[in-house]
Amino acid sequence: MNIKYIIIVLGEPYSTFSEIIGKYFKKVKKFKKKIILIGNKSLLIKQLQKLNLSTSLNEVSDYREAKKNVINIIDIYFGYKKTFSNISIKSNKYIEKSFEKSLEIIRKEKKKCVLINGPISKKTFLRKRYSGITEYLADKTNSKSEVMLIYNKKISVSPLTTHIPIKYVYKKINKSKIIKNILNLNKFYKELFHQKFRCAVLGLNPHCETLDNFSEEDKIIKPAIYYLKKKGININGPFSADTFFLKENLNNYDVVLGMYHDQVLTPIKTLFNFEAINITVGLPFIRISPDHGTNAKMLGEKKSNPASFFYAMKFAEKLK
Image 1: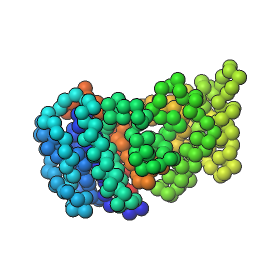
Image 2: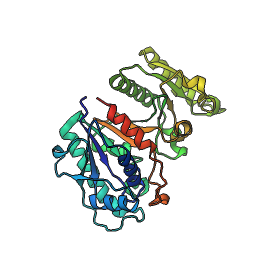
Image 3: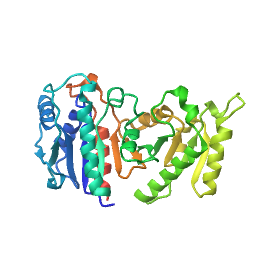
Image 4: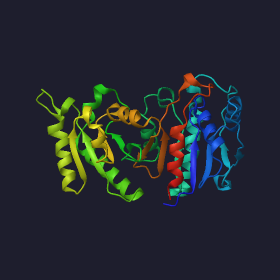
């Protein structure tokens, strides 16, 4: 890899992301990579002015015109004049065009780009077509092995199933998926961090036990762990989720694979607050999403915490 560009898709226009990046660029003025925002310039300027977070933007029509140590922006037509409004499907074409532009650049520059996207409303933009942006980007890039990793340098977590109702989780758990995800995570840690990661796997049922005849731990999770151990992966489990996230356990592992979204995202957000980022493993480029949503209730109030975006940018800037 030779990371040259950090591409930032502004995402949902009526979110607190403009406030978050405004706070970042007000504090940070020098960058190791070329920063390219993709979104509507006029709307962003108006939102930043309203929040007293104005910053200078260098508009470029071609990403190759981007300059270092300035905030470059590729303008995407929006068509609405309000600076703050309600999240709705009216923004879908604008968001789609923003992602299309970012992927167009990434296809040309191969592995020289990191993509950071602002928050997207799953209810309005994805509209049941995809369970999350992870799956959306995987489809757009014909990727088949995407894995969600919520990263913090002390410990990271990965949910085997992502944005699906809890009642469907057990149907989506299988041995091959566990094996595939772990192998992809191991490859990612080896290539990006030059380390062979240490992995813990959580069970599905409370205390890894069930009174049913079929035990996911015995029939699916344990056989997958056994297979991976034979492949030389440093992996242990299944562990009971209710007691795993204690300090003595956290010091022994780099990644915790959970069976469903909130099983692992709740504890990591409790441990690190906003100092965690969502990395999509398995795409042909590195994609990062700050760990916060659209937060529409706080629009224009200047109260949003930008810590996760700071963490995302720090991570992206360090990549070589």
